[in-house]
Length: 313
Image 1 (cartoon, rainbow, N blue to C red):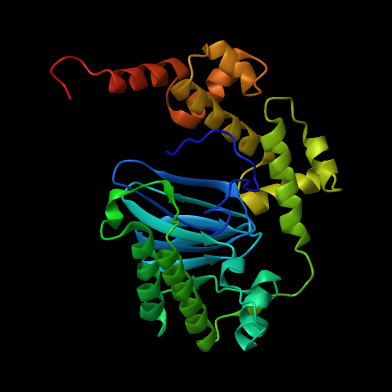
Image 2: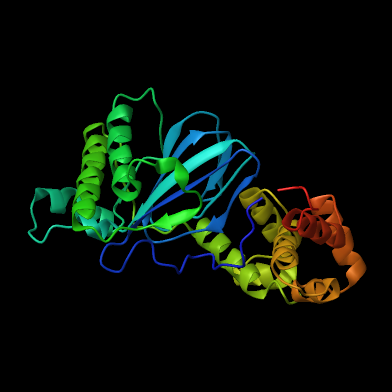
């Protein structure tokens, strides 16, 4: 499993550089699971699932991906993804402002400005049987080449940016052509200005949990955040996330505990309280349930893997 330190639900990091907000990401593994935690960002994202079986949730709607495809994420969409070992995925995250024209020509008026204003949405998925798939794949590969050259499989789980004006020009051209192919295939859709209150409510609750997981969290407090009674809120949350609020909170705390066990020298009792558990026995019980091991065994196994006996490499 990929374990990262606590991060905001809305990503605060910059994708790309200040002058060229576009970045390439890639992750693959034959041994480890894939986990992309719930988050959202203002930038658009093109995900390419080239190998593996993925489960992805977008605005709490679940999708199972069992074949190669593209997935498009629009600005502000809450998303989460997992995969078993044997996966290969990559993504391009970009601010549509990089495609903007100074002159207000028809391209700017009909396509770029609506994207920037969140008035137009990219399609959800694009599969190989669609007539424009190969054209989009060709342009996507052109973007990857601009970022990584001729050795795309040498990187995993890194953000790649480029300061090369030529590479940036090629990336912009490829993105514009992808937009053109999607538009000519009638795959762009208009977005109504009304907010999706359900998604905004889930964002608010998940953000609160991430910011307060070290403290005691009461269901009544979560329910009051979104103006619901406790019983209705629990049903609402489980339908949206697939887990009860208590289960989600415990799972989140355990992920933070695993990170601390692997990356710090904190004592297990310290980690217990740091992650919001009010007593050690409850922490150990939840940890065992979630990981099928104990904190001490997990740390010992990690230590053994980092310091193998003589004669091993």
